[in-house]
Length: 639
Ligand SMILES: *[C@@H]1O[C@H](CO)[C@@H](O)[C@H](O)[C@H]1NC(C)=O
Ligand SMILES: *[C@@H]1O[C@H](CO)[C@@H](O)[C@H](O)[C@H]1NC(C)=O
Ligand SMILES: *[C@@H]1O[C@H](CO)[C@@H](O)[C@H](O)[C@H]1NC(C)=O
Ligand SMILES: *[C@@H]1O[C@H](CO)[C@@H](O)[C@H](O)[C@H]1NC(C)=O
Ligand SMILES: *[C@@H]1O[C@H](CO)[C@@H](O)[C@H](O)[C@H]1NC(C)=O
Ligand SMILES: *[C@@H]1O[C@H](CO)[C@@H](O)[C@H](O)[C@H]1NC(C)=O
Image (cartoon, rainbow, N blue to C red):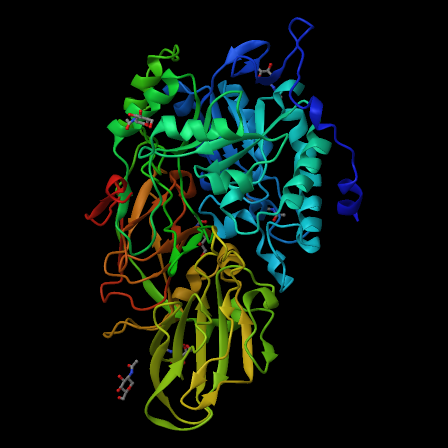
């Protein structure tokens, strides 16, 4: 096993940070412990950086966002590598198209931006399972982010693919990566397993060499710094506008008595969960605290500078008191908006940076043009139960008790659980999730009649009626795995039995659903429109597909899709999964559609899976601006 061998690679930590620059013109990047700064090519260096996640931005806009960051005066970007984005299937790696990390690094290099690389393996990032692949959960008792043998073997195999690719991109090897983070906020995790961190240190040193500056980032408390830091990995902190910078950097100093001050995540904004008010962070506060940090010579990375979008199923979730899923937009109230447009916050930040370094001359690139394509009326295609031949080509797995998504090897999206009523239920009879085992929402129909839904932590019982032998269809939605804290082993599907009256429901047929595969393959075809059911007076309830076409008008400009009075679901445009919508909860009311997804000449295919109930008008609206629920949350009042 590769893991076993690598554990024994000898590492001489004592020589970690001594990087000599004797040969003139040689590229070097190191830490000057005497003078408390970074040294780049032998000269003092301070970074002013911003976080940007290539996995949240369409590839064709990477360069645009990078140029805007450069024009703000940044000299570096900070980049997470989401493991599950590159290794969705164990052992199968994808570094092409929108997953072409090296192309992204190349564009940053061409733009004149250095890179602070954060390859995880765990990244948090409000990303599905904090970037860990859900296939790790096929080992039922795996202890993630620890020295657990199965976990360590998977991590070692992944880093043996990723890190050698990154090595030529290190600054010292002619690329633009100046520093590399190991793990992420490890001190916030319960395990506090130094053997795991030591193993990572060994792997990073083995693949990246002795001269690379490796670091850790932790929340600003003693407990987090104690469990998250390790000798040989430079300790940095993260904090937002409500933290006293003197106190915060003093804490970094207790763990790193000499060397540069670094705030690895200075929060320009904050994330949103469905059902919570929209979070905002005041631009004046961001620029004031940024100025204070730069004035004392600190190195600062702004998290986020460009947030982007959780397309598809990539959003994460939190689970403190209850499960809360992250919204599709990752706008983050960042200086560049979700659509990559400069904001007032960006201009305020640029004014601060100007006081500390020369910023590039020339105008800030303007916002990309937006277009209001107007209304499209959709048609009903059919309900999931009636479309299983198309959506589940492999057919069902039979099982006495329900299986999880992980046991079924379908890790994301939706899955259908089917059984029959064990007896006549003429009176409303409670269907109960006694162990809160619905992860995360279950849409229940009996013989095609929608009965209601169960929701994790929130709705554990509904009433159903029907006759013995009727078909019970339960569509279960994975709303994104927990990305932070001790509950990241977040299995999906029906994790425990459901009880109907006094009966445990058994003898399931479980249908894996490849909705994305069907839609990418051209379903539902336009020809099939002729056989669509005639428009109904009463709008359907329960999970139903709709489709429509946006006529091409020669433009492929960015736009925002509003599903007014729709309830909750998922949208695809021309086969691309835009993410979840849930205007019934908010605060996000529109989905960002990058212009290049639209065709200027062909009809643009819109597919909607509405899970609960569509409005009678069946209209969707393409607008030229985003829309949010008006009530917003000022983060400053939270802390
Ligand atoms: C790799 O990812 C890209 C999108 O970034 C996708 O277009 C391509 O089909 C994927 N390749 C494989 C082999 O799955
Ligand atoms: C990065 O860009 C510089 C020019 O700015 C170029 O000399 C160098 O070769 C580039 N590095 C890589 C790895 O492409
Ligand atoms: C931050 O803390 C230091 C040390 O306790 C204190 O002197 C200073 O006044 C504080 N700054 C602010 C802005 O509260
Ligand atoms: C679902 O579709 C099937 C097949 O088209 C149909 O028989 C059934 O009545 C539909 N159910 C609902 C609730 O519309
Ligand atoms: C189920 O039906 C019973 C009897 O009609 C009623 O008392 C109860 O409130 C209902 N429960 C739910 C969750 O709707
Ligand atoms: C939309 O779907 C139709 C087939 O149903 C196809 O002919 C057309 O090319 C698709 N449009 C785009 C932009 O892919």
